[in-house]
Image 1 (spheres, one colour):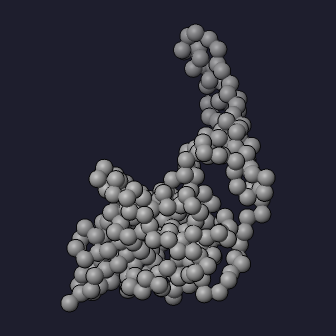
Image 2 (cartoon, helix red, strand yellow; image 1 turned 90 degrees about the vertical axis):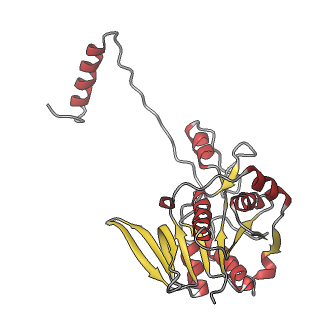
Image 3 (cartoon, one colour; image 1 turned 120 degrees about the horizontal axis):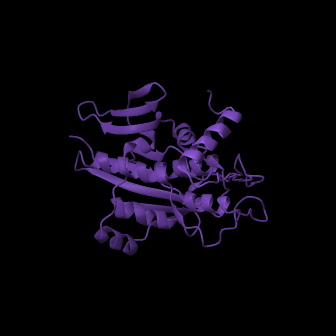
Length: 275
C-alpha cells in the first residue's frame, strides 16, 4: 500500500520586477540609506516570486495525477511575507507556514536554506521539495542547491516537467539544457528547482481566494527552528543603481522613401550594414 505524498513548496516575496524596472528607467529608483535596499515605499507592490509560483504549479500538476497528494507552502520573511502564502493557498495548497525571521539578511541564501531545512525536518514526512530556480530580486538561484546539501537529498534544477513514476516511486524530471531537453530520474525525497518552462501557473478561483483570506498560516519564529544561532555567511554590503541612458535620433522629412534613404545612409556610416 502506497503512502500519501507530501510536497513542500518554498515561496518568496519580492518587489514587482516591472515596478522596479519602471522606477529605474524613469531615474526614480533610489537606494536606501544603509545601501542594502531600495526606497520604493508602498508604490511598488510586493508579489510572489514568479519562479516560485511555477513551483506551486508543478506541485499541482503532480497532485492531478493522484488523489493522496498534500501540498504545504512555506515562506521566510517579514510581516508582509504571508501575502504570498495567500496566493499559494488560493492556487491549491492545503497548509501554509510563515517563518518570521527578525534577523533576516537580504541576499543570504545560507540562512534561508537552513531555516527551510529545519521546516522540512520538523514536518518529518516531506517527500518532495519544490522551489523556483531563482529569485527575481537577486537572481542568485542558490537556495535550492544549498537546501539539498543541508538535507543530504538529491537535487535537480531547471525543471520543465516533473512527474512521478508510480511503478518505481521515483521522480522523472525533464530539464532545460543548452543542447535541448533532457530527462533525469532520482529517488525521493528530493529537491527540485522549477523553471518557467513548466507552464503558465493557473489562476485561482474566487472561492479559493476568499478562503485564503480566512485561513492564516501557521507561524514560527526562526529562532525556534534553528538548532543554534547563525550569523549567516553572506550579506549585501552595497547596492547601486546602474545609469540608464536612452539616445534617440529623429529622422526628419515627410517622404517615407526619403526617410528610408537617410536611415540606410546612417546605418552604412556606422557600420551596421554593408553595401
